[in-house]
Image (cartoon, rainbow, N blue to C red):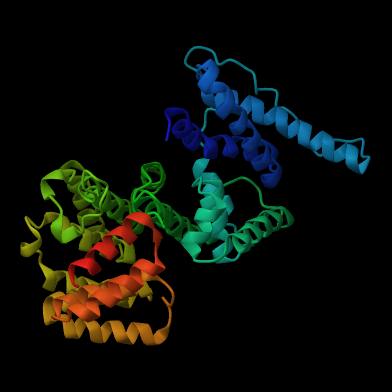
Length: 410
């Protein structure tokens, strides 16, 4: 990704937030912002990045929005404006010591708007990933394991529902904040996961997505410093991101956790994550993100893979299973069970998960089964499961790794 592309990804939700705050027409504003981003992607590499790139985007997007509204009015043969016009402060230069017009970062308010209660939870997640996270429709579809056409329709309907609900660009009422925050945190979690292990394509990581997820999680943490789950999610991201430098070899090959060079881990991020989760666990009600962060901290603080405190991790997974009915949690629980009580115990738990069919068609159950069969001394069964997992994944680095594991066992 070029510097211009990275800058545009960072600025896109901020510019959209500014326009929606001013004009409160989500769908039209997003269309206008997309056109402004396209103009910037063409002009900036050739002419240079403006001194104030966000103001440039706001100005261009505002003009595009006016054009869109005028075009719509002409089509409908209306004479009056729909209330969208360029604000008086759009081109105002701030005086010394003053905040520039439009300088406020509305990203968090935009997050809450995308999590409006008029939308179903899947639509909330999809719209936020698209509008704030910067994922393409195809990437959002991959996160939900649905066809791209289905996701495109879902996002379009979500925009229509926000308009029909008369949603305003403002923080949610106190009675709705907890539920809206829960969805916001889950969205950030999905954005981070898509960046840390891309669902498809030639690259294992998408650094711009993990960076954006962490940036937004920090912003939410600044807003709600005493919320344990906000701190837990940020800690989980940091503790996971700390391992990223060791997850691939020089040739881009995936390196599993047990084989990573821990000297490459970012100890600054580890220390920050441990401090965050330790404080949250001691001062806030327990939640699933805090427990996941605690598990990540046990991994990160182990001097080597052999010295990992698996009994403590298993105990934490048992707590987590009671807090979060999540098949991915149960998948990881099976690994912890195997590391403490042997591969058969892990395989038994995996069989129970498979019987529920909640991860049918996903590559991860087959990959975990292959690992546990390998530990159990069944190389033929493990090779077959590795090949099945390789067939199911759309990620080239994961597929290469799984096929390599299968080949070793022939």
